Length: 513
Ligand code: HEM
Image (tube, rainbow, N blue to C red; front, side, top):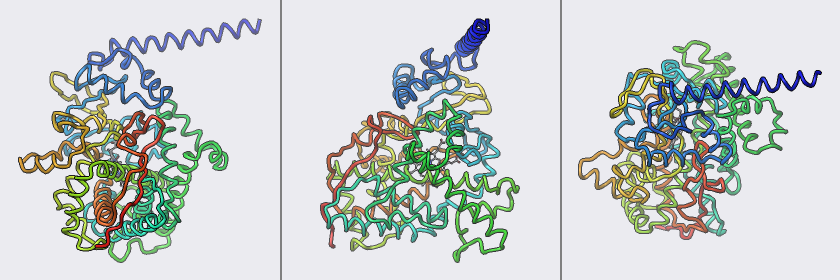
């Protein structure tokens, strides 16, 4: 009798769930405000297709989106409430000009571990309040003032590469550049370098392991309880489960430690800025932003911001250094052109040239722009929720819709960048001589009020590292090619089919003069 009752109740539950989902699907296909937009029916019916391609098939929905654009044009409905729009001339409107409000999508928010960070602040006005003190900490002036810190880390890389040459060591570029970016971001943001460059070889646990965390995040988008569950698991068990999760936990723990230490230093009336007047760290900047309400200077806020800055600052810049490296080493004529230009301003290999001078070098700056453009791994969709209706061609997009576009699809638009998959720095020089500004189409850092916070830091690292690298050494690619930086899978950033990213190189020559 009890069994019958149990079976009937279970069947009732299943039936109700089925009817509920069916009603949802019908609503999404017929009555939803985005129902009339182009795209395959299965993409707009529910979020199942995205979950299937990303979680079950392993991060391949971005490829389906690309196919949808090939079939349906520049605007496509890619899930229940999101339109992908890859028209390069529409990006300014999508991100919103100054004064235009854009929220972050709630779905994207739930894949991250730091809900109170700027990256995860949904409301536009709240985001502005939180971001304002950080803008000056990462402004171009601020980064120019810490150029000597970045240069000192670059010098360490150069010293270590000399050692690698002497020993014939095979190097993974992501290890080399990841150690650099970790030490730079920890030194500046945490006030203390994590010292990855001081280890023998190139220690780079964070970058390797955090990739593991990105995989989990993608799953968390569809199953958000995973993140909450992770925070309850003891660190030792986590370590056994996944190195990626444990490393992420390590970043979370150290951010909290630095945040606690800073808040205590404020209470004790300790000095909050260094000799140059720059706050001692990101945590000091936030803890002393007295124009913000106390809730915005809480331990949770400081910790969350510390986590996001660390994770956001590590891998992206390292990847672009790798990307530029593999393209230059595959195009020796371009490499030689760059080396000749560097010799013209750096008399000796150990000469120090300011970032602003390096930026004014035509070929180096073209190499940097082309390296940022000719990529296949910035697959993240940078979604923004519009708060007012928006016109795109013949379409009126309703308020509340999420508009997204993967930077890769914009960066590789053949109408703006002919033969987009070919690395050709000259295109930037030619466009400039024709008075055409291609920079406005470069999508790698996004735009608007939620544009990359670390853009100046990233540029400083790129210029200083590339100049020192190619003024000092020649390299060869070992068992590697451009295909090792081409995404076949997407987990926030792109990965190859076997879940990797990066190339192997060996130093073949040290330039003496
Ligand atoms: C070449 C290197 C980099 C690239 C291409 C890059 C790209 C991006 C992009 C596309 C976004 C927008 C994400 C979205 O809207 O979903 C973003 C946001 C962000 N980036 Fe970067 N990034 C780079 C380096 C850095 C560095 C070095 C930092 C360190 C401070 C950093 C910190 C951030 C933060 C905190 C955000 C969130 C901003 C906000 O929501 O207001 N990034 N980045």
